[in-house]
Every structure is written in C-alpha cells, then in structure tokens.
Length: 237
Image 1 (cartoon, rainbow, N blue to C red):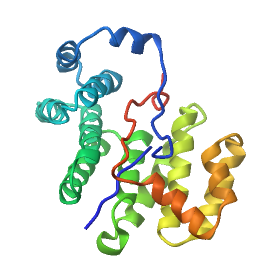
Image 2 (cartoon, rainbow, N blue to C red; image 1 turned 90 degrees about the vertical axis):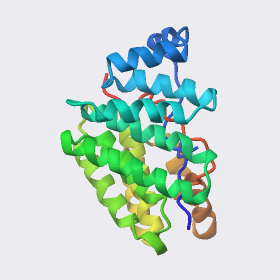
Image 3 (tube, rainbow, N blue to C red; image 1 turned 135 degrees about the vertical axis):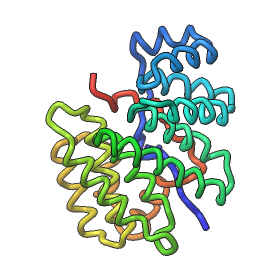
Image 4 (cartoon, rainbow, N blue to C red; image 1 turned 45 degrees about the vertical axis):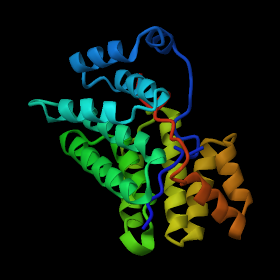
C-alpha cells in the first residue's frame, strides 16, 4: 500500500519567497517561534515559520506534538487545524509507506475539522490534494480529492491569491488525469492556462501526452519529495 505526498516540485505548490515578516522571523529561534505560536495558534504564517525551523532541524515530531495540543484546546479555531495537517505532511518524506497512510489520515481529519468551522479555499485545496496521493485502485479517494478541489476553486474570488488559484486548478487537472480522464484534465489545464499563460507547469502538461504526461503528474505526486509548506503567496494579505 502506498500513499503519495508531494510537491505543492509538488507542482511548486508552496513556493519560497521573502517578506519583511519572513526576514524578521529568521532572527528568532524555534523556541521563540514555539512560544509565539502558543500565544497565537490561529496565525498560519507564524505556524508555517515554526514548522520550517523544525524541518531544518529534522525534528518533525516537535511541531506535531505542539500543534496537536493547541488543536485540542477549548475554543480552538480552524487555522490551527490547517497548521496541524501541514505538520503531518512535513513528516511524510521521512516516513515509510504504512506510516504515510496514517499521516495522511490524520491530516485529512484535521482539515475536515477546519472546514467544519470555516470552509476556505486553502483548507479544501490541501485536503483535496492529499486525497490525490492515495493509490486510487486501493483507496478510491481520487474522486473525493477532485470534489474538494472543485469546492476550493468555487470558494476562490478575484481577490484570492493568484498562486492559490493556480495550484487549485493545476491539481484539479492532475486529479482528473489520475482518474483516467485525460480529456477533462486537458480541459481544466487549458482553462487555467488562459489565466496563467506564463506558468511552466501548465505549459508542460499541455505539451505532453501519454507516458510523458503520466510521468509529469506522477512526479508531481511523489511521496519522497519534500513539500514546501511555507504558505508563501497562498494566503490573503
């Protein structure tokens, strides 16, 4: 049994970038960030900065433990659940196949709680994408992933971060391709390319066919690849 988690290049789904806030956070230790997060658990960017420090230290269990406790606190909001889900995703590349199944299950569970509190394009996107990485022959989760990604796209607006819209639409096409509907996948990617004509990922998908295209989508959903979960450019400002 295998579950595939990969780059959001996971389609470069979570891209690296630098902001004033990022530069300031770089001066803080993981302990500083952890204390700050405990006082502001709904701060997605703060949690992302904290998790990046944990990744650098290869201490994947630390943020999982902290965020699990914060998520269980009375009155906790949806963002801490999203951060917890991403902490599970951070551990995937270092885990074996069976452990990845449980990490995926736990991430989906956290995102489901977040959506129940406040449905957002980001939460639906991450949950939908995770579902795509399951072996569809065994688990039959790709249709659920497509449904989530359709809902994520429905929740976007003209004011939504362009990077998030691009990632939702690219992943949606990947989902249809994994389901065996290459025509629908191309339809989705083509529509997305009209909005993002310079995107190399869409261009590459639309230029390839057959085995070459299958390799592109499969590579985008590879469990051993480190996922960039920094959330840079994926959140409303």
